[in-house]
Amino acid sequence: MAMLTLERLHDLLDGNQEKDGLAWQGVCHDCQCEIRVTATPKVDGIHIKGGSVYEPQSDKFIMKCDGCFVSDPVLRNYQDCEVYSRVVGYLRPVNQWNDAKFAEFHDRKIFDASIRS
Ligand SMILES: [Zn+2]
Image (cartoon, rainbow, N blue to C red; front, side):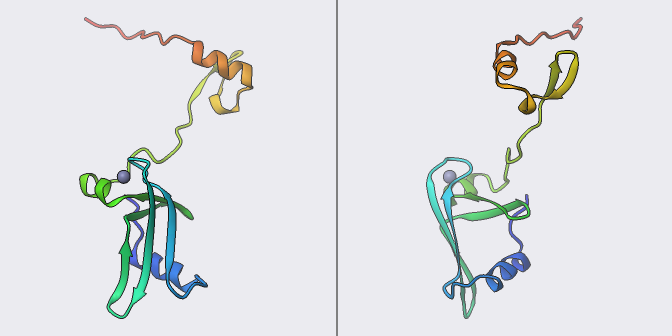
């Protein structure tokens, strides 16, 4: 699920110039509400408030509010999906097509060729 490990959190805090800890500002991955997650080092450990932070790829941080974390702590649908389709005789990623072909892609109808008995 790629939650921040305690070791990674310590690394981030060590590399941080602010004395009062770290803060992530943005929107919850699940419900899109505005959130601010803070990690504050204190005598009894690091206090995390405002939600949870995930790092699915290096330096790519994704947040969840407390409510969404409680209902589903697993981070889902966080990667862009590369879609290939045929364009002028070749299979190429759709996001590399020109604007006109990309618009045409959305007009295409899906044909299900599976055989059902
Ligand atoms: Zn949320």
